[in-house]
Length: 118
Image (cartoon, rainbow, N blue to C red):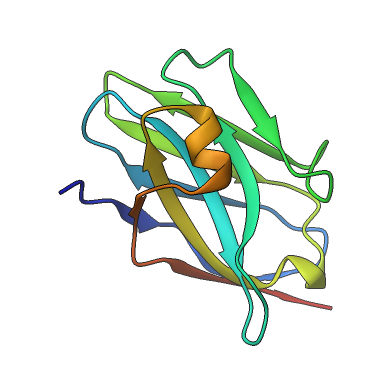
């Protein structure tokens, strides 16, 4: 069982920034999904064990940056120029590959709420 713990959510005005963190034990590809009530979970970003391999949803490209510090076993999601439509619960995920992260990651954190006010 892989335990993922997110932090860094909160309330911010549109145009602002937040950084999410996820404690990520082990040699896994990591990523983030988000979900709003009544909607399916949406892929946001993924990163391989080697940090040069990253993927983003079109809706966040150019605004969000995923990164990792393997020495600290931590993955980050830097979110800039936030919009009200970014409001969601954000989940950290882990899998053996970025393909699995983007499709059906087996490991999920509890999530952290991000709310963007207009």
